[in-house]
Image 1 (cartoon, rainbow, N blue to C red):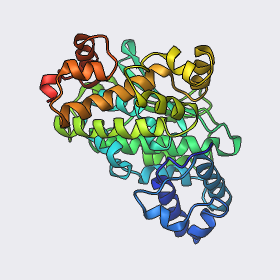
Image 2: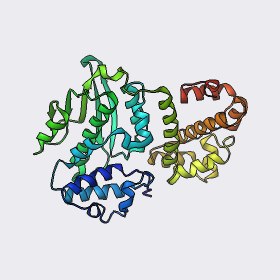
Image 3: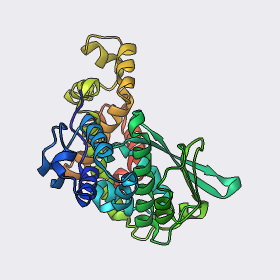
Image 4: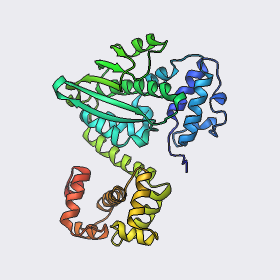
Length: 332
């Protein structure tokens, strides 16, 4: 099922750029099933299929081959809502990048991101791998991601931030001048990967707008949003419903599988096909309920541990510390 779970901010930026070329928003959204008013709505959501169709329309309609670069360059962290505020309030770029990878599902992911540290070269690499797997959209998708990541890095680390080098896996395009104008660093093509390379010193430099309280609050909100996204569809949704009925009795996969009339092996396989696992769903549910119980009830940690299906309070306290970097008493 192609659920509508992604925000529309990227499409809104593309609409603005096409409008400047004399192309209407209606043309961009043709045959996508997206209403024009959704592009200005914070609550509107679209599906992956709709995003892909709109991207194909962009390729067909745009008079400029570098529209992906300019679209990415026009995005900023505030366009990303709570996800963006969590990034910008992180203590360091390292923490922000680790967060961005973990919670990337919230940001209409069209690439897979990874952070690679090369201590011997005093550099770090932010790597992007195409997830759309549509040849027609490959370069457009990667170009938009490369430039938007640069824009977000500058939002977090300061306008003086620059990459040491940008590497792209496709051949040099005709609009090479746009790369030079946006990135202001060496750019090479026909490379093994799509990499953004930067000095390792940036990783642990305090961010311009770091704020511990804002970071903690927004990450809690992101946990709630991500849990909802992960468990809205397919087998993950069915498992989520079974677990939440009674965590005490459904904290192991065998019992849940029995209730769903399948083997635990089959359930693991179906969840893996959805990009998740029983333990991930269970931990997410426990974490959100633990936060809710500690914040809004007078239940003891022993009572909460029992309600969440932990063997004892000590195991619960250890898990909570791992989830939030705070003890239950500190959080309360």
